[in-house]
Length: 326
Ligand code: DGY
Image (cartoon, rainbow, N blue to C red; front, side, top):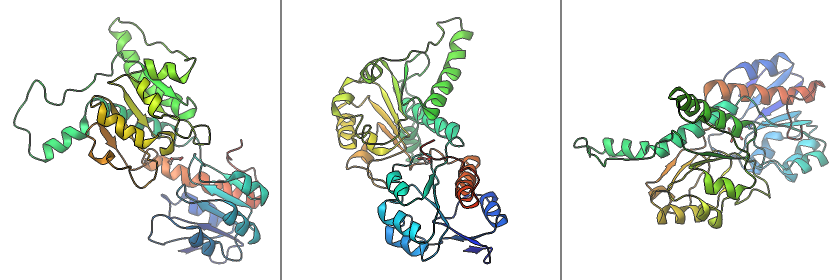
């Protein structure tokens, strides 16, 4: 799909993105915008090389793409100045390679903070109250009437919430949990919620009833939650991951879920997306959703707009909106 065919700057978007604001921004600033309409979900390096072609000023890409040496050298050769990842996470981007080839990298923080935190809170509640299991039970026509033991889960009120990676999203999640449950506790004259900075990750794992993971993925956070650390958690704890799949050793997690039926997880991300490790899909104590933490209309349109502003900024010499180094 081509917009403004006579535009001076050639910008490629590897996917169609929500809204029209990002398209308008680019075409009003003299860009010829080419949106890839290829049906396959994940584009290979070769697919993207073909999109870059001989001349390309900037690319808006996706977190499913492998932006390394090969693509940055091709983009630079084609005259490209900017690559913008439509995501806050940029573990799919080799920033060093981009720097080497003089290509600026952008990402899209901010607009997805609350949306992602809301999904982490939703997964916490869904896991605690076994909502997906109960939904499947209803749809399967198994409900025969109220029973004292039917889908008994955990109450989040008064529980200890642990956040690992208290950056923008982790802090927003913590605020959400404290506002929801903190005000309730105070209104009833009970103990107010207290904040505590833990001295170690082990302390959070041992003390918290609900733990939400929000670190970035890099060498230091790969398999941050492994077999040993899972063993430190309470038997009835809830673990939520809306960061990146490889932060958790998913094979160890499946084993832990199997051995501890009262332990629950809410997962938005997986180690080998789009796949789940064998056994995970059979676990009743897991709620799994397909990487939708930022999927609200407002956020996705915002991400698309920021991604366009990043590319435009570099092409036109304005400050780039946001880059992973800033
Ligand atoms: C991100 O932005 O990094 C999310 O994973 C996708 O919304």
